[in-house]
Amino acid sequence: MTRNRDERATGTTHFRRWLAGAVTAGLAVGGVGPALAQTPAPEPAPEAEPVADELRLPDPAPEPEPAPAPEAPAPEAPAGAEVGYDKGFFISQSTDKGSYELKISSRIQTYWQLDSEDADPDRVNKSAFEVRRARVTLEGHAHSEALGYKLQLDFGKGFVTLKDYYVDVEVADDVFVRAGQWKRPFSRQQINSSGRQELVDRAITDKAFLTGRDIGVALHNNYEKSPDLEWAIGVFNGQGDGSKFAGDADPMTGEVTGSFTNVPSKLRPVIVGRVGLNRGGIKGYSEADLEGGPLRWAAAASVWAEGDFDGDDATRQQAEVDGVVKVEGLSVSGAVFFALDRSVDDTGADVDGQVLGAHLQAGKMFGRLQPAARYAIVKFLGDLDGETDQHEVTVGLGWYRFKHDGKLQVDVGSRLGEGGGLADHLVGRVQMSVGF
Image (tube, rainbow, N blue to C red; front, top):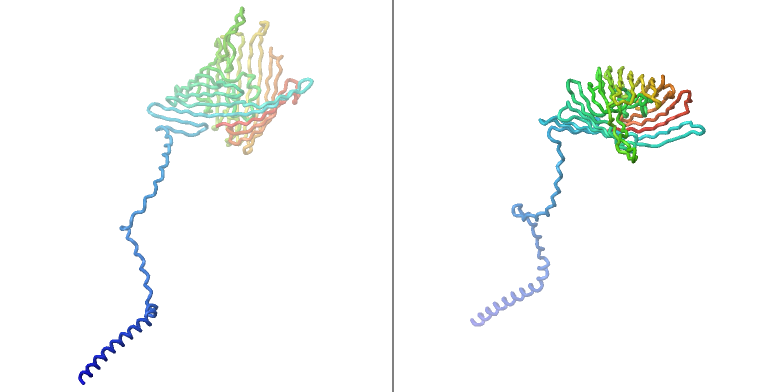
């Protein structure tokens, strides 16, 4: 009985273990899928935290760019030097070695002329363009402001010629000694620069009374700057600045030796003196009233005494009076000339003649335009009365874009002989003048 109770207890235990295993196996087979399906998805990985700057690896260094070529340093003016423009490009310097200045300026005048003359039986017309003047000027002072100089060359008309070359030495306050080649101080219109004229060119009196340049020496007070009282006196060769042939011919072979020169074989000489007054701050040696303003005037007288040291039995003594008035754009100028001309003719007889001359011209500014007109006369008397008297009537118009340094001029004129008609000899001219 006891064995049966123990056997039943043991069997019951084995059955419980078998049932637990079976249930466990069934649950394992039937519940795997749902269990896997209900497994939650893994959470995303957290973002990487930024690396501290001190722990970051440095970026690779960029490729170095080529260094730019060094710029050339701007040239510097020497210590104490000035460079600029004032009616010409200049450089000046004052040091313990002295005071120096060089000014460079230039002027070109391009010109066209029509010359129409009534010649029996037909009328003759001639016209051409030309570079009438092409000037280059160097001026200033050297060593001291009391020692001035000027050099002017002309490249016009196909030649290179020396116009001016002189030195001015200030020997006292406003008293200068000038030596070299320049314009004789005789006629206001001649002393006026060719770039400062109201009409295209000067009056016929200019050539008739031998005005122009010469080589000599003079004492003056800077008369070209129009001081209140101007004066000048000088002695010159008397030949002028034009070159002449000086030489000899061998009578046996005919061979000619010599050269062209503007130095005479013998001094003539010519003594020229001038004195004048200037009032109101006038620019007495510049035509046209470009400045405007109240009444200004200038007047002067000049004399010319010629010797006969060269023994050619030909002399001329002459004098002139000239003046200019400017007021509110109106400019009026003129001159009167008288000359005694002594020489000998081909037969050896003495020839004593007189020459009278005068010109009067006026112009009025209207903005940048200026109409102008001139009358001039040259009359021969005494033993020269066989020469033909000359008359000039000219009218013109100027456009002053940059005053005298940039202007266009047109004029038409008549050259009349004694008893001739107004249209017998006509001259038309156009000129562009530029200076800098």
